[in-house]
Image: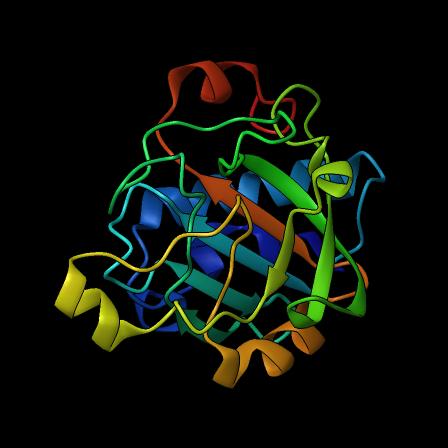
Length: 198
């Protein structure tokens, strides 16, 4: 992976979609640090901006080689993280909360939610219990934009970044086996302590 892909200046506003550019730049910096430390060799970067409400698209998947936006999607958060906008995050088992930080997408498998993708958290104290907690990307019927408009939020998960069933297989296949996933929220504790942002 050419490190130029992590230079935000090489990405124009059209190619990054409707993401906040500052969040996109943080995600690129985090991914670049992981590459430079030998923790990843990604072909894709997925960014989740949990500072946005669940009723809007807040997940973006980028092809780092072609600098192309592959997906711009709704994504669920954990039921104990908050209502429409999550405000509380955890790395603990049974918390039913989302976790922040950088993950490496691992293997796809068939589980109770069908075709799913395991995630390995790369940030001690923030998301490194993800595999033990079974925090995975999977499709869920409660990730539905129409339902979100009706009830004022998406359905919520047990901490997994769940997506629309209609796109889940394509999205998982795009990012599995080494893609990076960056989950953001302006949490001062995480921003100040993340090994990939400092």
